[in-house]
Structure formats: C-alpha cells, structure tokens
Length: 187
Image (cartoon, rainbow, N blue to C red):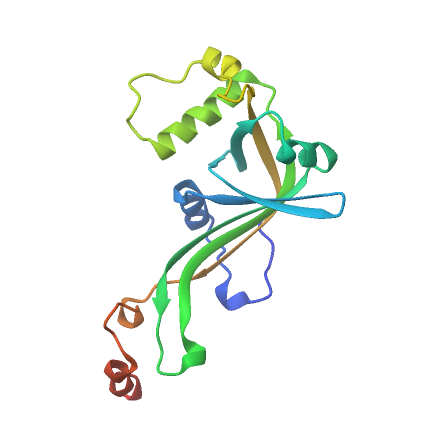
C-alpha cells in the first residue's frame, strides 16, 4: 500500500518504477525498537511478492528486538549524484528512496524460505551457481559462530517512495565550477 508523503513534488507513485528500484537496490536499513531503544542495521534483501526478505543468524540483538516488537521500518535509498546550481541553496542530490512499515516474522515454510534465498542469490551473484539452492542447505546451514540461519519476511502495511531524478545538464563532476554555469543559467 502506497501512502502520501508531505513533499508531493518528490513523491513517486509509479509502482513499476518502485518495484524495479526495490529489485535492483543493494542495501536496506532495518529499523527496530525495543525497550525504548532504537536500532538500525543494514541488510541485503530481496523484494518478492510485495514483501521484503532477509536472512541472518537465528540469535542476537536483532532477533531479541524482533521478538519483543515485530513492528519495523525498512528503508532503501540510492544516491545518483549531486545536482548543481549557481545558487548554493538549490544544490541538491539525485536519489530514489523507499520507506516501508510493517511486521517482520520468521519464515517457517521451507519452500518460501528456499525461494527467497534463491532470489537473493540471483540478485547478488547472478549466474554464479550452476544449480538451484537446495532446501536441505537452507534447513541445515550453520554459521562459523554456530548460529543456525534464519530467513525473515517483512509484510508491508505502508510504503512511500520519493525521488529526485538525475539531470545530465546539472550533474556535478570533478572540475565543474560555478563559473562554468553562471552564464548558462542566466539564459
């Protein structure tokens, strides 16, 4: 579900564009809160069936906080360069970002867990493996620290997207200066 944002000029409502962005962006930031303590952690993730999936150890601070409060915020943001202006306050950043709210839960279904991990492998290391991920690997994998792997799903209840599209004409590059732009912007 996409909801309105305050700065409507930057709002992105194009679901195809949002889905493409979420499929390609590499890092999401999981926001948790428990015992009046916030905690934000960067994660690899996949966007699948209108939910976010991530994996990690089945124990630790993140899991303790999820067990106490499974309401989360998940943010993905990519920066596409700086946009210049002879007016310093108009210098800006080209970007896209998505903020999602929802509940996180442990994925219990082995088929769903295996599918999400396969999609993750396809995203981060496409064509690297010559066979599909097996269910037994997902069920049995234990880290070098002795923790069993767990797969989590964020079921999204609200989602907003913002963007400031890149513009080649005003994209900053090293060597560009305000002197180059003053005459161009006066036209």
